[in-house]
Image (cartoon, rainbow, N blue to C red):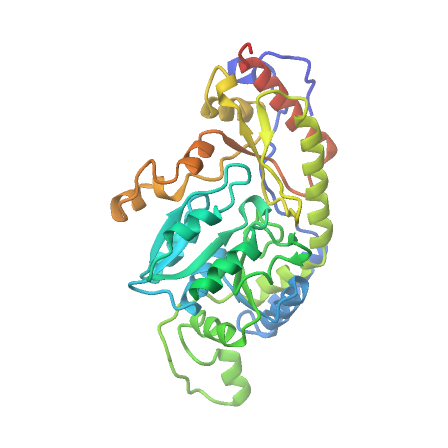
Length: 403
């Protein structure tokens, strides 16, 4: 932490708040994690071994679901969920525009069409009325994205899904450890998808998981992650058989045993990490009450937010510049801000191949021009938090226009 007394912006040659960049997210690996991985590396099974099922069971228990299926990324989790839900050519899936592209890509990968809908301005969660408007006879599923870690309105979405006979899929990649009306994320939808990328709540390097209370869906996804083959190498070894059958077209989406060992080790610290994220969010919220031209996203009273991201919205009409310049100025101060996300329908692939265009989801588009993600990870120190607040105050103060 540097001396913050220099109010001259670092982007213009002044002294930065921090000499080294504070990232927006960062994994935490301790000695127990390393030992768990080392133990597997010294074992007979590096993949399709016993640690996969152990991690699946531990994760399912943690989130209160009956089944969990481990895969090698959050994207693979979404793809497997689409497959299990029967998404294919001629079907549509409703997806909020404010999400990472993988949410929509998983639909396309199954031959379906993502129907992008707008979001609520306060939370940036999917707008239920917009969902209702987009349902057609081709709609197969609704995807709820727990943006930044804020659980969606699952009771409201369940009513819509049940009225129309649709699958409800949760993209909960931001929200493990969160809850909705006292019920944990991971047991709120028909299929619940998680990511274990290093910036998420726990990591397996790359990895993902799908949870469900439906054993048939879990079985379909286990088939899908293993090339569509009905048994894996360990099962055949235990049976003393070489014979296998490919029952459907699948992918190699398996997660290794050493990755599962890392994930299970990290799971033991997850509750404390989520608690620390909430502490950081509370400190941010208190600090930003006194800073002009910035406001955090809304948090509904019936949820426990998991805070994968801490997103603020700039009141750009009160600033003498745009979000892009604020982004660059904060990075110059040593604060690794980020932007989540470019709305899906604005990406060239979707504009060129799915006919999307600006104006399709105006609330998401307006938010995109104003949002910033601030550093949020549990090993941040109180001094780190202070640096973020000092930098936001310094930069916004320099660009604030007279009221």
